[in-house]
Length: 428
Image 1: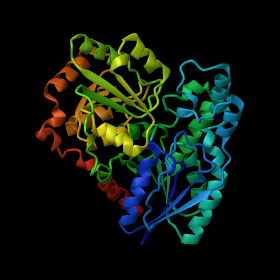
Image 2: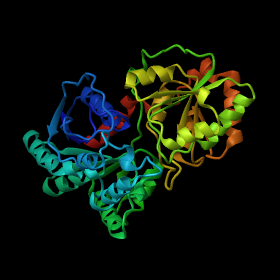
Image 3: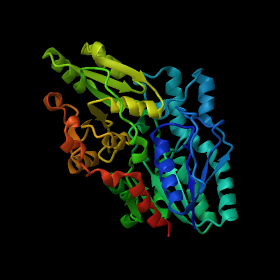
Image 4: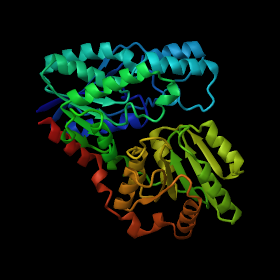
């Protein structure tokens, strides 16, 4: 039986997209005769933004190891008086307070690459113990937090193992890093860490072709052949029994997941206002955290009566609400190097077989996938007429109710079971 150690900060009861990728992949690897060891942080001491304490089933071939940690985010909570872990590492507020500005500067210049590096020394010690005890030859480190990759870097120096660095997001090109006021020295340190990881890892997984291209440029010593696109996906089993009924006669378009300050909604709500003025019945359902700039856009275009604010709900409830929708909204962060951003929620959207209105770079990876799978449309951030005409057409024809559209099998390649088979090829 093949054995692999997966090192991940995010694991249940942590909730959110960062958990699902390896929670699902490890399950299918275990079912395919692989002994999976998960190394993660003690959830009682972790700094998770959101949690879900539901009971989970763990396959008998999966062994979870927990370690202690020193959580720097807990210091922030004490200093600021906040009771919550900030989303996107403080970067969701467009108008930070003085204490937030100070916290951001400290985070960007002293906690490199991120505040969860306080877990590393505990994780490294336990990882070496697991490798020696169970004679493990394959190690996967997944990030963010990118500090997890530094654990893999040290393991590679100390043990003869096959190291796979799985980077789900950009590192030094992450869209909110400049919000931390990094100095030139801090940027250089962060860049050197990224470069070493990319050079020393035996294989690098990324989630999109553009991210592969981006990471390849980081060093002339990086062989592009060792950087492999392993996309996110959906687990068909999660959707087999989901079939909620709509509670509204309006056409419902749903956005699932918390929004960040870089996800622009101005043009979208302007289009919604024009549809309403033309007596077209539409409702916008927002599941998750709604930042200030989105609330301001809602007020600016006077669409409050057409917004359904759900807030954070557990995953099963979110799927029910998504199922009781006619279409989905997906917005890519309006930032540099965003062509390779593939939101994990896209894969849940396609599993629910509703058309997707995506707003972002029309020449990016998501735009290409949407076109190849025929699962929706990609619109530019400022394409008011395109957004409006697309919604008008969908409201008139409602493609989600069209059998030909719902039977589209072009998206099956993103079934997590198929993706797990690709992963296993790198464990031989």
